Length: 210
Image (cartoon, rainbow, N blue to C red; front, side, top):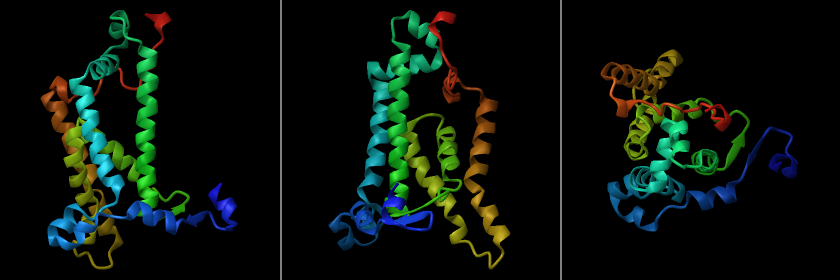
């Protein structure tokens, strides 16, 4: 819709002025040297992402709402028998999760891509987010630290000399996914219950079929 409004003939659009608002960082970061560059030089959405992850971890592990949601994820039949409204929990979790995913897309366009939207520009980054969820065994607080690790692995090819060999660069880009596969293998070998996904993840629930 924005492309049509702008009258562009190409499937892309650049929102520079809007992007500058999202990319604005804390003024104090410029005067704090390496510390400011490392921790205070990002747009507000980056800090909002960390806050959302920590809040989600607290809600899931420390509140009754989180307990109900985890119960629905493990066994909706048992949760329903305990008086928990399974449909409401599923719809609320899906809506909130979708909004958070939308914020991720907003960050990519407005901050990472400097306000430029192009069709199919996300590439494999969506799969990287899914890999991150699996890697952190569904723990939002661990996801904060793991995202730094994944981010470092994702840009590793930029700092390792590989000449003009594009095939080698693509191999380096595989690093986050290789790490995820290794973690999955190790988790399955240990077979700890806390390292497994919710038993009813992605499965439909119909109360009439109990």
